[in-house]
Image: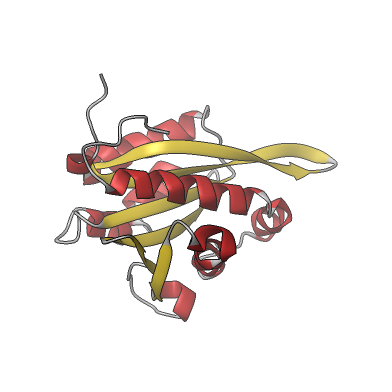
Length: 193
């Protein structure tokens, strides 16, 4: 995660969202194994679970999840899924699953099916917009993950403020990983020193 958080108070919130949601989803590895096996995108499930993780007793002391919209509520078009606030600092959060396959790697998903979400990040809400992206199977060390992050930055000026991963056991098959990042518009992310 980023260590410099003075430039934008939203960076603290984004770091909390990344840590909390990745911990939450990392404890639900059976779900992700089933999603991979069944080729299930989890587009409604992930935002609904994200809301639950951010509105439960642990999170309530740090963050307030105020509104739920989008696919978690059965919406068809894109809307940010959750409005969150910390003190007087309000944000809109899109919780996006990315089921990757050989025919649809992460970079292709970002440029295709997920384009509307990333375009939203560059629009009029960019000062409050956040995207939590969870790709599975994917790992932080994979070329596919790196290419996806590069595509998001190149095409949409979306920069990750941090990245985390978790293991998805699938015995007797080889384990895979899930990788997550929170993206903000590049104008909100401090330059690396």
